View (cartoon, helix red, strand yellow):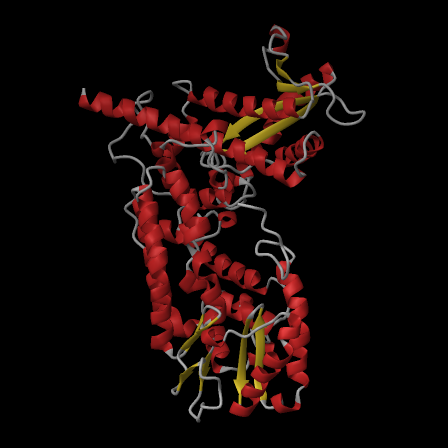
Length: 541
């Protein structure tokens, strides 16, 4: 085959193609707007090469004539065979190739159903058929980590975003609820969970990652935000429509009194995002207020910045960014606060302790606490080494009895910032469910990390000062919330890494948190599963 030469027109795949096409089309649209014969057009809207006219038969036909006469000189031609005209009057004046429909319109325009409630619901249900095919294949995947990532990013809310934005929610409420049910079924199948749609665990899963959920946002719930956001940004003149008023009233029932909205709708950018956040705030507080003190501490910790990074890591076994099926299933149950063990389960190393998640990840016997710590320390050391910081492991490990064999530096960075002392990095893991901090951790996010930071400074500041070092405690809670000092350190580390690569600081920061978060959850799961397996062996023996 010889070379295919570009002779005319824009090329498919060219990122400038849509813009160049629109520039040419824009002049033609202006000609239609200026034409006297098109003066009775009520609607003249376009999305690239798809246009919609509404008005009298004469004005619509005149618009077609403008395109037919002026378009060819611009390289634009109408494909009448792909056009449709709706009307109750005589339509014989239109070209014979155009499909003519003599009834009240029930049609699709640019992926949007236009018609009554029955038609719109059926339209959405038909659209779900292609999604159902995808969901069935997700359920067949053997890797739940991959299945959940694909479900969240490719098969859930994103599949219905456009329909939700262009269709009044009151017309498609039942079909969107059916779609939500299919997402719930796929999720429980992929993770092998027994979780009802009304359970607090599923309600949490429907929250965004930043609010401690799994990002499986309900389309039926957030369709009000999507529709109102679309009207606000594109057609504020429709705000008085009864469809908009109905959507507004429905939205106001989903949020707290201080988060309600009214007409006129704001025209600010990201209005849909703002409305969805208001819905999620109400949902989060409902879960928080109905939970136990331990549930509240868990929700506050997992909704802290970067705690959910393990759920956003790109699956890559080669880079160690993968989880075994049992680890992923445990991690999701633990994240959602679901039961993890039989009621009679006890710790294999502490027979007087019930085997729950908190005890498993904090039990000092069996070596798992040390393994947790060392895995995080080694990962941080690796990032410091990549940043050319010349880090040293376990500096000060053999200081002698006068130092009480303390190790104030899991990692020592000789030159951390300009003119500053060497940084003594002290990595620590703590739990917000410990009895001495639980009451505060259930009210204040990150309370356990802050308490441990303060304790580390109390224990290590003096000895670090004598050695000419600066104590830098990096503390993370078992649910993934990092202390303030860690946030500052990782931000600076990301800048150093970005300077050594072609990646941005944001990319490197996401890599740091993603890697450390995954290590933490994976280590927690292994500690629990090891104890559970040993307990089962003891019970069976």
